[in-house]
Image (cartoon, rainbow, N blue to C red; front, side, top):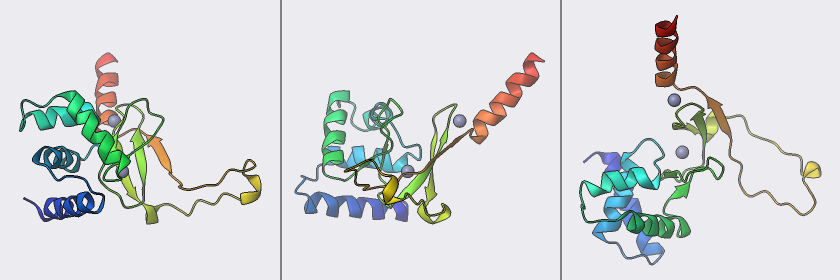
Length: 155
Ligand SMILES: [Zn+2]
Ligand SMILES: [Zn+2]
């Protein structure tokens, strides 16, 4: 087990304790599936991973636990507007690069992005900002490579 994974599990255990969540093997396996995936996985993808270790688990159970994790702040939902729920365990504030072709999501450190300013005077009346998420869209390396291959094949 890598140091990163050990640390993530320690954090998870502490998080459960702080929030009064029972620390079960099932929850641990679900959490590990999110940590191990570098892809900001969907619940369906987590289900595929977890099923290899707990074959009897259902997708409904995954959804239920994911919802509990989100409600208690153990996991974070990546974006609200991609149509599918994408999850991550990285609770450090950060931004994202999104591949517009395959929807892969990559983390970018908060410090890599220029501070985003929004003048209070331009806010709609009564709106108060809580978080700022910056999302850059583009095309990832593997999609670019595939595209090049496809265009070569067709020319
Ligand atoms: Zn891509
Ligand atoms: Zn992220």
